[in-house]
Amino acid sequence: MVDICSICSCLVCVEPPPLFLPFLNSLAYIFVMTNLNTFILFQLNYHPFPVSIILINLFQFSYNFSANFNSGNHKLITVMKLSPEDIHIRPIGHVERLSPEEDDRNRSLVSRIVVESEFVKGLDGIDEWSHIYVIFWLNKVSDKDKILIHPGGGVGVGIFATRAPVHPNPIGLTLVELLERRENILLVKGLDAFHGTPVLDIKPYPDWERGRLIVVTDFKVPTWVAKIVK
Image (cartoon, rainbow, N blue to C red; front, side, top):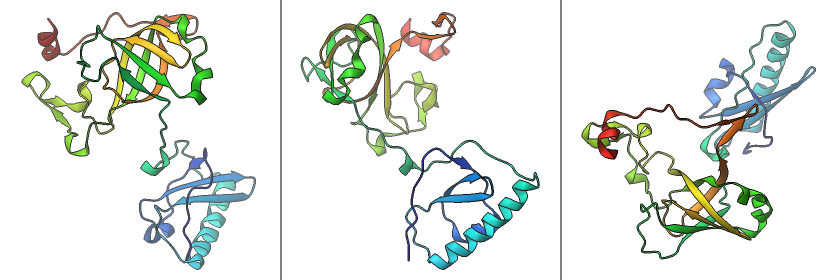
């Protein structure tokens, strides 16, 4: 028996040939084609298969695909299908509140972002920006807390229409004022994250493209939000 797992990274996906369907379960399959050689990468979610079955079907698929490709009968899909196991996120640091008992919703308070030493060079030049986005992992949100419908001011809206922390992937995104950089520490104002929250990434604000800054001024908000913030 053999366990086939990820070998390569950025490749191209194809739709499954019917021949494979009886053998595949939640399979992400990827191929790379160089001239007449076709290589297939399987991710079988750790389901073992007999080597003989895999080789026979792999040879059959490679032969048929090469024939169809050379005759012009082919369809390439350039979006790689990923399973959850393919996504790996590593924190670059964490949040430190001046007091762990602070109200994290008080946007006037100052907190620290402590960046791991191996990422410190990535902070060079960041102090020239006045504001930055902080992307963090809401590690205190449990699976049982996650919902798809949120009260949303009493009207009930989809979770993706809110900034509630109980999204399927509990990722926080906050625009903060950058007050100062001290080596691997950033002092920021307005970060709504608990003490010890893992920080995933930092990006400057505003964005820019083709010689111009991208700042949205003509935004709109739902009625239920307008009632809350007025």
